Length: 291
Image (spheres, rainbow, N blue to C red):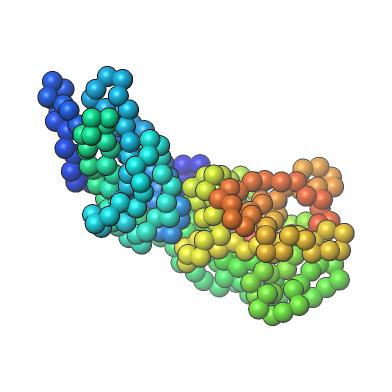
């Protein structure tokens, strides 16, 4: 999805190669972020557009990921792609050196600017318990988009029909694990995110290859999804290892889709669960105001 647009400012600081092709000896270096960089989220930088000025030559790369111009956080590698946890809350520089086989080096620093417009509030709902929402705000030439997600896993009072963790701290952290029919009818306005809604969030969080990490990362502007596990056949399984979050989409009469994230994995994926399984819930709502 390309809808949530976060401005990025690229500032070239030093490019040592000559613009005259007859005088070029050093490599030509370019790099870009494959997704908008967001503080503490993982982002992938790609320098594959760089090239040597010598025919048949190939390049090696190393990165100054914190932009201090004092040390290089990576060793030389022929891989032009690197993934890092973005270190800047607002803006900062990242550097790259590319070296050809003759030892010629070109160095480039670029400045990145990130800004996530959000607020955390407690909305008015029909639920018996309160939950916070994180409200992302996006402005476009013809409309304004408010994207509101539950900031906490939904927690319900005790019942034989769902699962609450015994300790109060765990209940606050993990919420209630509930079957799909309960999760799909919790609140009149806030609803289960559809697969498409979750996909928008996945794209906002760096795509399927990185969203598993970014959805869990402890950053105020993120969802900070937890790993409560799943209850099947009356047993809590995979606690602390996986998180399953219901979508509003049925797979068939007896099953529905859920988002799955895993401890230590950067990836996010969709899986099909029996509707009687007890999984986690985040609710959401969105508003579009046209100018």
